[in-house]
Length: 111
Length: 113
Image (cartoon, rainbow over all chains, first blue to last red; front, side, top):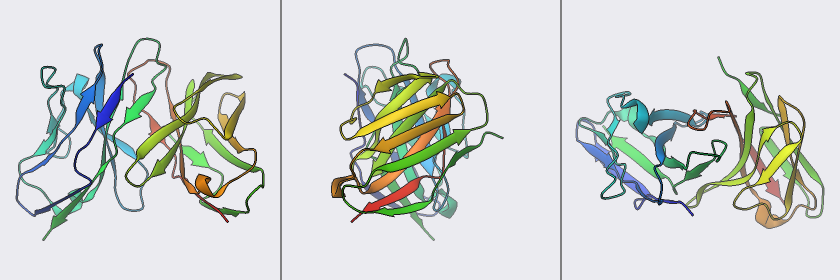
């Protein structure tokens, strides 16, 4: 069975500082990894997925299969990045698009 | 613009009541999902459906059932609500292809007294 772990419940940084939200997974196959974000009073939405290798709102995430990690990084945090972030895994194949989510990390960016 | 709507934003029910949570999507998506969101536990999948009248259990199906009579509508049913089902419930939909993005509804905050 797959599992996603986000070790930090809360993460606080100051504006302009680098930020890294950690995500580790366990899955024996080739997973698809996602980061979803939920801003205050907004619905959960996709931030980025590893297969498209995009940079969205300055965030990047690299899949490290050796370390089974998919950490989310941004070199200069902004106050508007404050939100709940979830890492999620899709096992692919006949999983019908099911996602396994991590516990979430609340990021607070202080002015 | 993909729209997933949920019938109620807030709901308060009493222990033992039968509760219906409704979700509607307007993008002709094949897959639909129900999650509950709890602090420290993240999102946990309750049930999902990949076609009309098809349903599969997720990770925490106990105490819940679902119905999908039409492609655009996916209902979550609490047969006899209990206090431990107090939570935020999120509905999502996606296209059939496995790696596609899930689109979420605004959520229903259910309180069971």
